Structure formats: structure tokens, C-alpha cells
Image (tube, rainbow, N blue to C red):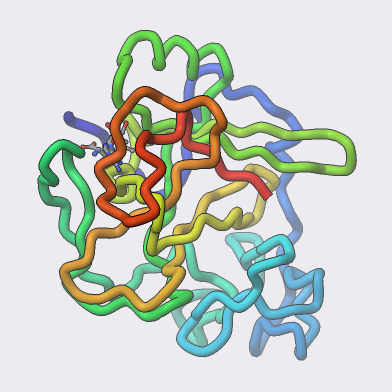
Length: 239
Ligand SMILES: C[S@@+](CC[C@H](N)C(=O)[O-])C[C@H]1O[C@@H](n2cnc3c(N)ncnc32)[C@H](O)[C@@H]1O
């Protein structure tokens, strides 16, 4: 199916969430953006990324440097920018019997390396329901649920019509990618897929679509020994 290639999330039909429109102030770092140098984007005082930009912070909110910061990604590249920068991976979209298309890596990917952003249209709930009824079967919408105190904020990301290579990544009950919520300059969450282990050349990339209690009725073909038999009913990411 044809889709429009986008670089990052874009607002789609029904996306009206003033809270998520909040824009962050940038840091004023001139040298490095690290916790040790008190970069103000690293408000939890831990570095998000370590050597070769591998993910280190897996438990606290990940706030990256962004367009309003003094640092940059070209001269003296900022080490706190990952999900919007280019990487040197070699990924291919190929057909997998029964699962439709999927994504293969042609090179080894070390554990904790950023692989792709799950970018798409940010949608309102009604549009998510309208698309689910209209397209039936294939589901691309990722539901991001975040807890802020006793409040739950829900964001829907749909790469069906506008997205990038990540939209082809299939589900596995024993995946090699983990999902992390990353913020790059605003409250609206972005989704980064990172390698959960070293991934060998010619392995298919996969992440867990969710832990839904209601089965989807769609046979899971991930092939894992611990396969749960059916795809989760919806794709979800929560922290
Ligand atoms: C986000 S899309 C993934 C890309 C899709 N395979 C394609 O060709 O565009 C999700 C859909 O892929 C298929 N799929 C993903 N993982 C699968 C799996 N483990 N077993 C069977 N089908 C799968 C299902 O049809 C699912 O609704």
C-alpha cells in the first residue's frame, strides 16, 4: 500500500490536545550536553545515551535536545540527539509469508542502538475508530498511554498513510526491539525503537505489539517458542 514518507510525527485528523502542544525551552550548552555538564535538557541528571549513542536511560523519561537548544547535530555533534539524526543501519523491507511485509537488517545491530522512530500521524480517538472500521484487518495505530499522577494521557500514532520504514516492522512474542517514549522539544511523545539485544545480519526486526488480554483473532506467525498464538488486539506502548 502506498504511503507518504515523513521524517517525524505530524498532526492528523482530530488531533487536538493542547497539553501536547507545550514547547520546551532549549539548553544553552556550548560544549557537551551531558548530566556532568548540567545540560538543562537532562533534568533527571542522568545521560540518556552513552558510547556510540547507545541507550543507557531505560527507566526515567527521555528528553532529547532539540531545535530550541544552543547545541547542534553538525559541528561538535550533541550526544543527546538520537531519534531525529541519521544512522548507518542497512534495513530492507521484504515480504514474509503470511505476515505481509516486514523489515530485515543487513548489518549487525548492537544492543541498545536506536533503530527507527515509529513516526506517523497523531490522531484523535474518533479518527482511530473510523480508520479501524474502514481498513479492518491490518492495524498500524500505536496507542501511547502515559501516567501523570492519577491522570492517564493517551496519544495515537498511525503510520498507515504517513510514516516511515518502521511501519513495516512486524510483531513478535520474543522481539529484538524495545519501545521507548522520547520527547524532542515538546510534550507530544515520540516513539523510539531500540535494539533489546545484539541483532545479527539478515534477522527480521520485531517488537511486541502489546499485552492485550483480548485476543485479536489474528494468527501470530512470529515463530517463537514462546509465541502466544494470536496478535495482541491493539498495538500499545505504555510506561
Ligand atoms: C504495523 S503492520 C506491519 C507491517 C505489515 N506486515 C505490512 O505488510 O504492512 C501490522 C500488521 O502486520 C501483520 N503482522 C504483524 N506481525 C505479525 C505476526 N507476528 N504474525 C502475523 N501477522 C503479523 C498483521 O496483519 C498486522 O495487522
